[in-house]
Image (cartoon, rainbow, N blue to C red; front, side, top):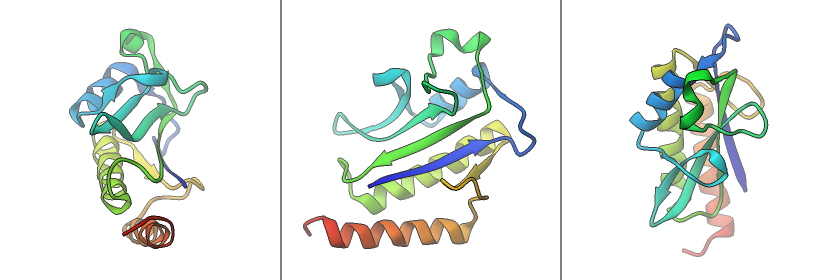
Length: 135
């Protein structure tokens, strides 16, 4: 199962690379494979953060000249930590990144991600985990 969230400026303004990389580092995300950022646990990827611009690269070495219309956070389940815990972390990280960047969080359908959307997504993940993962 793949779960994703988007972060973008409501005005459509691009995000600058320097601000972006500072916000990503502030959330203890690690730059790595595929030239994107990751939340790591037990040396495995819990979720990843990429630019909305293909191919998604977020190279900190190019931060000064970099801009992107937004970010995508995505997770492939099952992962190295409990699905519900990973989802809570991804939602909290998206909220903190959006706050740091003066942006908004959106769901995979590009609709505003509200507290009720977060509850629905969390319930969906918990239901999926009950059906697909051993206890």
